[in-house]
Image 1: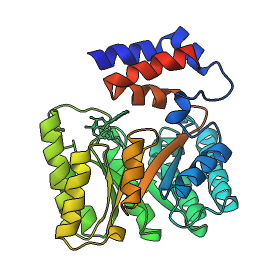
Image 2 (image 1 turned 120 degrees about the vertical axis):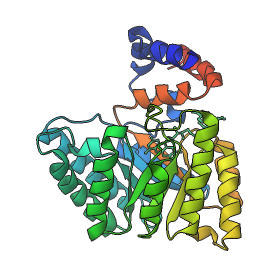
Image 3 (image 1 turned 135 degrees about the horizontal axis):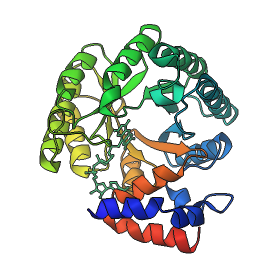
Length: 307
Ligand code: FDA
């Protein structure tokens, strides 16, 4: 209920206009977003690298419904890869793609999107930069798994996000682990009904732990993407029990969320990767980060006073 109210307030015209009216990002909004272009985003990545953290950068520029908009995303990611190279940030760096950015909704559909993603994957790996594909709504799960399977035929290192809240995900984790895939395990952000998903915090958390066990026991490279420290500690314990070194898995968190824990875990020797979104379409991302935690509402208020 509270989340719905905060989301409605966040998207209300005057609030949105006030917060986005400045030409750059304010101190509060900039906590969650790496800037408006690849130059500022890679500068954020450099700062995080200096603190011992890795990054995965993601462009926010809407989901195109035409071929030109989808082609533009290939170019945006090409510029992002080039900027990493210019900044000397190659090894260990990663970019995160969403299928919808590459034209899933455009006339070329799945095949067109896979072709464009293939071009971006080739650009990234030629520069020594990894790629993971985000998971979106329930309708996109099959096509995303299909696309990643096709991309991995050329480049087996391409990773995929799996949402623990989906009832199918334990089976998907088994299948992916058996092929040695890199799997970013998330709780799931899109919401789904009880016919396809766990819907309570307790059942989602247990499903997350079961998926972790499958990934650690199988041949996967688990990417433990959660701010829930119980999940993070469960993963660290599983890795120890399985005799896996710290290069056999990694922990991922979003930019601006639990930053002290990010620093602490990196200092403790964990591979810690920060997901950094950037680009003109940053506002929805910012509101979602506010909505995730009730006490963040004061950040929204602060952004209104000093955008
Ligand atoms: P949970 O929501 O239980 O949060 C645990 C604790 O973390 C909270 O109690 C709070 O203390 C803290 N916290 C969480 N969010 C906060 C915030 N905004 N501000 C302050 N504190 C906060 N989802 C998806 O469907 N597809 C995807 O591809 C991805 N990709 C992705 C990449 C990475 C690197 C991460 C970290 C997450 C995603 N997600 C995602 C989002 C994911 O599904 C999930 O919605 C969020 O991570 C929140 O779930 P947690 O596991 O963090 O636990």
